[in-house]
Each structure stands twice: as structure tokens, then as C-alpha cells.
Length: 197
Image (cartoon, rainbow, N blue to C red):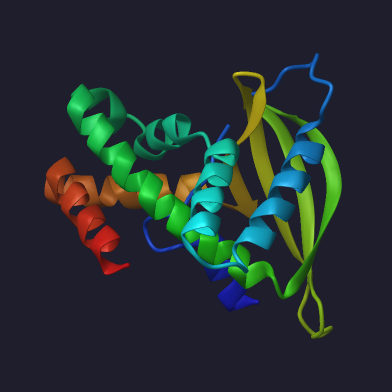
């Protein structure tokens, strides 16, 4: 369970997800996310340029990169120049997609049950429970998705695993790096992480 929580609650410094809600929407946030999670789970089991392209496209449909970048930097976002914001978001997008791919691969050993959605301060909170398929000794893990609606489609805004917010974790980690090494130090660390592959 500890390893699983580390995947969802502390994906190095760089992992993530995002999205705003409309009461008139025919499709619920839960229905949308359930379908997209199934697509992603199928795609990560495949390999090749075409499947990689489809995986990236599906991530683009699930994640709100603009909100993720802004929320994860907090007050520091307003201090950045447009070109700095663009550079940060491009690096973050690559790292988020990579980390989310790892997340999904790790959850292939689990059955994910969707438990409905409820109103939240920023959209809808979609609740899920992950149970290991073969090892009944492993305790079920609560994984909740905060989603909002952007351009008529749901987007994930945060993931809360056993009460631990991904965006909250990233925000505190990014702030520590910026306080110690300035924004340029954060960018260098992100570049190194991207280069690792």
C-alpha cells in the first residue's frame, strides 16, 4: 500500500492533473472520467508511435494543463513573464504525462470502482476505490478526482489519494525549490527530469 500511495501522492516533484463544472451538462463528470480512464488503461498496455500518439491525445482530453501550471505555482505564477510561464508549462506537461502513464500502469493490478460524484468548491469530486485484484490482504485505497468543466468538457483539476492532494504536494515542493534556487533553479531541475526519460 505504501508503494501505491507513493505513486499517487508523491510522484517525484512532477506529476499531476486538472479541469470546472456546468449544471446543464448531460454527461456527468463520473461518466466522462470513467470512460477516459478505461481508454488510458487500454492504451498504456500497447506500444508503438501510433499508440503513444493516441495516449498523448487522451491525456490532452483529461488534463487541464493551464490550471495545473497556475495552481502548482500559486503566487509565484503571477510573478512570471509570459515566456517563463510557457516554458514552465511545456516542461510540466511532459512530466505530468510521463508520471500519469506510470500511475495507470501501476493501477492495472487494481480494480477501480467509481463511487459517484459530489459538489465541490471547484466543480465535482468523483470518488473511486482501488482494490487489488489478487492480493486481498492489501487494503482498498480511496482515490478521488476533482474535476471542473472547460470548454464544455470535464478536466481533472486534482487527485486526492487517501486524503493527500497531488496539487497541494506539488505546490509546496515547487515553492521550496523556488525559495532556495529561484525560478531558474526549478526550470533546471525540470529539464534534468525530462532528460532522464
